[in-house]
Each structure stands twice: as structure tokens, then as C-alpha cells.
Image (cartoon, rainbow, N blue to C red; front, side, top):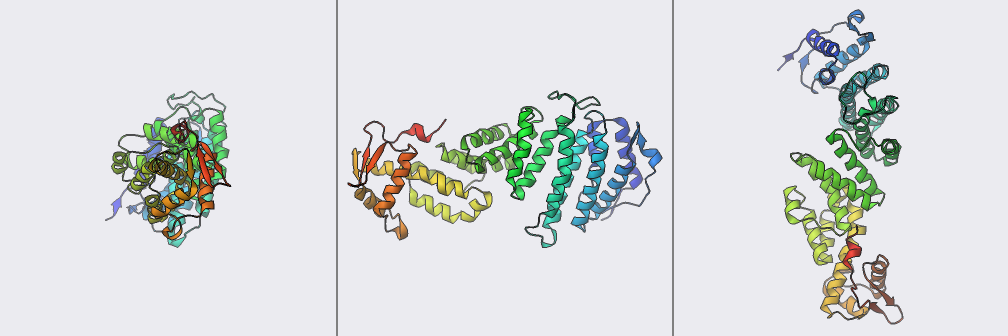
Length: 410
């Protein structure tokens, strides 16, 4: 099926949108046809004299858009699509930098998204696994757009409509989110700080479109998670989840992928109903095993879904952090089974672990290993007491030896 859309009509629509000075109309006009839509575009030279609108020369942008539209409609060469899109973006950056106000910010956003997506597709095409050169190239173009918005001297008025007198800073957060997405995809998280500091220094993350705020908090939450700042990670991810649109099930599921293990480590267990609602079935046995201190179930679930957790980037958090909570609850169960003595012989603990089938090959643990685990729990204040190494005895506090307040941190 060939969908014939004459270039004259498309260019006329773009020109009409520019003349109208309607931000969203210009943005829609600059969007390229879907990749491989097979639209037929006849060649036409853009007449520069007809593209000087209100003193601004749009002829170069129109020409680059025409070339990019043809490549996108053909959809045969994704690298060529990206190159044409990148050329369009650079041309638009030049025009945007000299434009007045922020009425072209929605158009810039549309072009930024196109550059980001075509770069990803170009890197994935023709078996280019692990090759991120087009995304790296896109970063350079996007950073130019970011700088033009961030350095605009007009004072930013939160939630003001786009106009010819508004501040381009209104466009910062969306572009930052596009850059965050690329940085996370190419595993270059250190560069995120170069964006986070100026944005939060000028408090641009506190107001704007709800979707941009949610996306920003999602990425910042993940960033804090990788920096072991789990209180900040929970705060940002929780904000993203609570303010995400109720119909955006896929986005909510994506947020919960990281929020659930962060909350697990901080002693807040997700409900079975919540996990089932968003299809996070792999977390169900993990949550239940931590709740009951079932370390054997925790280990088997972690091993069963190891590849999935590694791909999602949460395996180390689960294995090295959340497992500690499971140990704490396990030792609490053993303490109750031993009728809550204040002095617990480590040999009895080791026997209980062997009976539960824990340790190497299910044969239990050496006393030194048991002592090491308990010492770590005492250091983290999950257990109140001390260890007598010479007597191989755990001496517990008579008052609340397993404090819940230290697990459920504020």
C-alpha cells in the first residue's frame, strides 16, 4: 500500500503552522511520518524567499525536514534515518537559539524525541549490539538544546503558557529526561550529575508538566539507588509512582520494578495484590520469604530469576541488601523456637540452620560464618546484643532484641 501525501501539502502545513505561531501546531507539523509508513514524497526545492517568516529564515529547517521525512517514510536504512533526523535537529537548534520567547519549545521537544528514538533504532540495526555511537552522537545534539534552554536569560515563570516572551527554561526538564534515558541505556550514569545539579539548583524540577516531573523523579530515584542512597531513592520513586497517570500501567510497572526492592530493603513489604496487579510475579516469593524469614525460599527465588533481576539492575540490591533483612527475620524465628533465651549458643543456631537445609549443599554453616552474619546484623542494629567469641554465645538485649524501628527506617 502506497500512501501518497504530496510534499507541497506537507510543507504548506508546516508553513501554515509557523505563520500561526501556535506552539503545538508547529510541533505536530515538524513530526516525521512513522518509520516505514511508505508514504510517497515527490522531490521539491524549497524556495528560500517564501520561507522567511516574520524575519526568520526557515528554509534550511524545511529542507532538512523534507529529507528526513523521506528517509523516515522509506524506513529501509535506520542509520540514514538517524543522520537525516540529526541534521534536522542541528538546523533547528540554530534557529531555536535565535528565536524569541519559548513558543518553539514544544517543537524542540518533538525533534528531541525523534533524535533520541532514531539513534536507539540506528544502534540496534544490522546487529550493532553494544555499539552506542549514534546515541553518543545524539547526546551532543541534545546537550546543545539543553544549553540553549538552560542559559536563556528570561526569568522562568512556572506553568506559564508558551509565548514569544516566555522563558526557554520551560523546555529543560523534558530534554534532561531524554538525556537521562540515553545515559542509563549506555551505562554512563556519572554524566547524570552534570544535568541534575543545574536543574535542582534552579528548582526547575519542582514545577512543570506532570509527565516530565514523574519521569525526572523516576530517573533520579534510580540514580540514588545505584549510589546506595536508598532513602532518597524511595522518596523519588514513590513520588513517581503516586503521581503517574492511573492509566499508565506500563509506566507504573516500570517504577515498581525498582521501588519494590528499595522498599524491601527499608522494611516495607509490598502486598500480594499490588504485585499481581502489575505483573511483578517474580517479587511475590521474595516478599513472602522476607516476611517469614524463609532464607531457603529467598535463595531459590533469587537463583530462579537471576537473569531477570540482573537485566533490571536490581540483583545486587536483592542479593546483598535485602537478604540481610531475611537473615534478621530468620534469626528472630530461631530465637522464638528456642523459647526466647537471652543467651543463645551459636551451635544451636548452626544446628537450626542445618535442619532448615541452609548453607553449602544444605549441610549447614560453620560457626565462624554464623558469627560473621550475626556480627553484621548487630552492626546494622537489626539485632541488639553482642557476641562472646570465646564462648560462642550470642548475648541478646532483654528489651526488644529485634527492634522493628531499625528495619523500617524513616
